[in-house]
Length: 275
Image 1 (cartoon, rainbow, N blue to C red):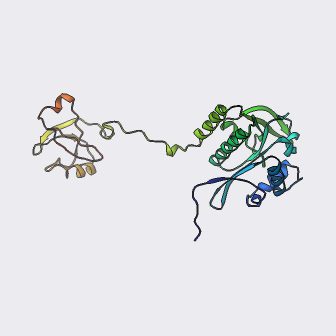
Image 2 (spheres, rainbow, N blue to C red):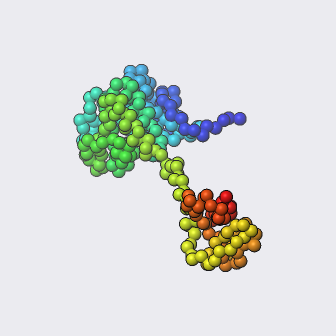
Image 3 (cartoon, rainbow, N blue to C red):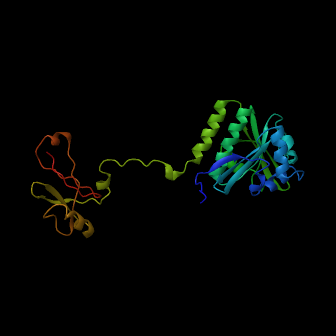
């Protein structure tokens, strides 16, 4: 039985696995103007320059991929009126997938380029989401900056860049990207403040105090019958229908006294006697 991996993994794209990445061939054809297939392009680039793309998978499913290279390997990039491109920089041709996938791939690329000593990454990004391009909005949200704008074949494009001059700059950019990766549901919920349960209940004036076998209960009017049914089972001889127990607080000085005190929360309905 084959084991299915649920944790996404990022790996390099090579000539041997290029066919396994859906849509990769069309991206390479666009940026090379149809001169090479994806397998040919990655084979030539890996021999002359090194890794030029990453793919993220969950099991056998491809979640997204990213392609980048020196500008001479992406001749179509020079046709957009947003240049000139940096001579010593690297062009991000495409990054695809959902927001989380794109940001993981971008961080992996930044780390790779920094290790190679590349000082600048650029991208001819599409403002309207044209196919085979990185999204301008997605890059700007990930910390990239806009350099120049231009129109090509009736569509707007932006030359975006990320400076990789130092490890500090790359680290700050990566942290900015991962700050946006966190999902709201993963944030730690704040601890409830003392008395949060009791204050959530509707307020009502005390009706009277009743001693219940050494336990003092404060009865409140206007209580729902369901609440009365639950609380009346906690204290023997509890309040009749139409009333409920309320939380009673005490100060530090009161702790040393022998006066009985009741603590009842709306969630637990527990009564205890202070000693």
